[in-house]
Length: 404
Image 1 (cartoon, helix red, strand yellow):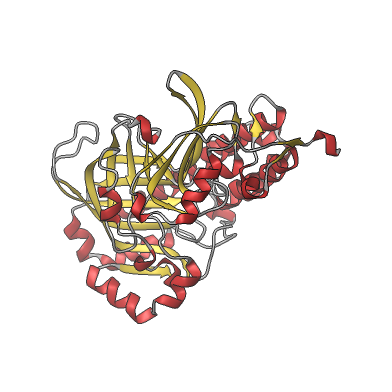
Image 2: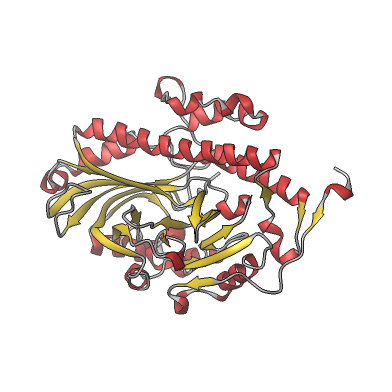
């Protein structure tokens, strides 16, 4: 590419408006990243969720609406990272009386760790693998085999598959659940190596086309009318569908293994970009670690391995760009967490909470996260709580295994 093919982009002096929720709990680095993002010439509005912390490009917990362009790092490396919850017909007492069975199946039906996948008869077929985009885009054609191998796996980092108790306090027609306590399965993971490769490729391409000042370099964007922009949009949506297929595979396998029927399901992406109407105009809304919370939309906001998560319904808050937090949010880096906590301390905390941890590590210790109750209190105008999920048996990658 010649130098004159690169567009030099300057940040605007006047930033687009930003709405911030739970400001007192958001670190300065995350606020600065959002302040930079809303000075992009394509930026129309931004929002910062109460779980926000510093990331690459957009902060984690950042929402940005843009005009006619998409930012690969505004979506994130793990495209389509999402939550999924299945509520079962099995009484909680059966779970507690048969803990060994549930542990055995949780281990047998899941696979964790960077680069891991399935082989031979353990592999699962799914319609997502026949998406024509795999043949139409050269980058994707070389990723199809890896995608097939990793379908139904969870990677590493903060991803998990866990059994827990879902407490429903009132009848909800949309969930179709009566008040009471239910056994539920909650999963958190994304698009694995497929999404990571797509993100890396198109971020590099965007940076080669769109030259931004150093402080904004990771916000390089692609015009959606360009060939590169259209390619990324197609690839991003494929990665999102693939992430959903991974969750569906995990839930199907575990549901069959424990002999359950599913009473209700709730799921949502939280690393993605959507075409949405904002103030009467179609914009690209990037949610990097943020839950869609349009009016009447259900979603999941997890806590930590010992803190509760919440099934929520969006209130459609326009100032928040119809968004909410995607979790509690980290208050401590992984490196700091491994130094701040001890294995014995973690074991004591898990025992006190009545949680069995399979895998995991000190980098995911509950203390590395913000107080989920404070986060939820800061976004009462964004979502209403429908039910509370309490983790009881948590499966994660072994200590030190990161997402690929």
